[in-house]
Image (cartoon, rainbow, N blue to C red; front, side):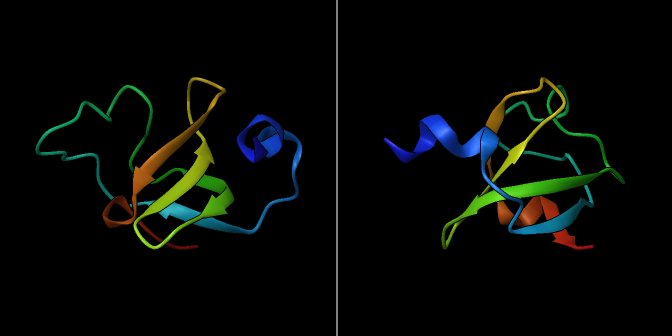
Length: 67
């Protein structure tokens, strides 16, 4: 149940959102293009960040680049 403590964990790295043009999902409510976010956890396909809603969310890596 590691996901319960992600918000309090140290930041792994910082990433910059480059676009919010999603094909299947609505991400422009949770992400802002040009904004820098703290990565709390990372998998092969997703970054887990604290998004604009203030909660930890998982997003595809295609929306980001290293800051």
